[in-house]
Image (tube, rainbow, N blue to C red):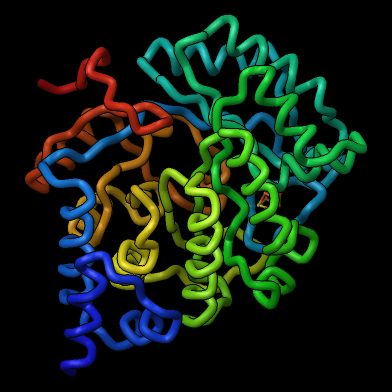
Length: 361
Ligand code: SF4
């Protein structure tokens, strides 16, 4: 027992955990002690009472995808009668809707649609950027970037440079799932390999595009593979310091070909806490209320999280897998206050946006 206590003390004060130490804590430490250590570390990194959130929307511009992940209920294969691709005008109408509600960040993400070429995205991003210069385009995923490189015969770097020049401001961490070959072969065999995912992220970070990192846990991976995922991210962060935040969320199995079971709330909190402790070089840990719901989102603030993520005005991917959670800005702010913190609005780069009023006084 004292070995676990010593490890928790080391991690709570920012000491680096080895792989075996991380796995031991994840498996053996009691949840409250793990959470207390993660919260202590969070308070050390971000002293004070503030919990941030971003006003954003997610626009899923196409559901056509040639990757066919078995955990995904959102995509439709090419030529499927339910496949859709929005026109630029349709995307712009959604951007306007979000901007009218104060959004400072627009996430534009979809499937890997081989019909769409890089000029389609350049035109779209340039229009969004010129018509809504105050919103940040936080767009695409590693899979979509890699797909564009393949379709257009470009390098990943060329794709990223062209998208950045068109107005893209940051690359979300989607599509990481679990960065372990065995898992990806089972749940997303056609997706980019772990080293390719990390390679695209590295390129983006070297181009000064900030990025986030995610983990979708709860499909088929083992405890050790969860820690392997954290290890891979920590190593890249040591090299580039290009990740702003880590966002773990759990697999929603209800309408997917893979099926399976949903992770428990306790498992979610345990993953959050070990993530805060293991990723000693990540500035922020984000609560993902979209899958576990607002009540768990509130608890997450005591398990290492300092950020509530976004308002996600419009989102389809997790919704299609069976998640029905929604939240307004008022909901998020009330939740943060009920947990004893003060909400604050941030932008994509974690700058506080004092010029944007809170929804509640
Ligand atoms: S998760 Fe993404 S890449 Fe995989 S099938 Fe769904 S849309 Fe395509």
